[in-house]
Image 1: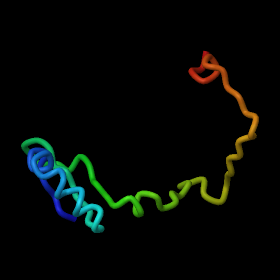
Image 2: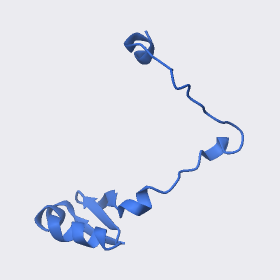
Image 3: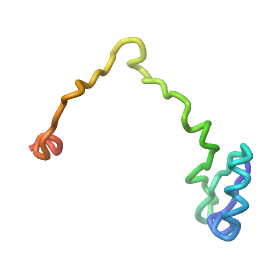
Length: 77
């Protein structure tokens, strides 16, 4: 994975997008420590199915087609 600073990312945005579209992963580093705070990946990689984690094979979620939720129910009032 290639890593670049925020400044380089902003300066070379178009080239970075071309690299990502070509299949490369790009890490964006920030601050004095150059800590990677974000990662750009090609769209096909980000669309892979995600595992449920510890509930895999133990639980299933199904939503009814006519399920409705008021704003109060949504925010927990």
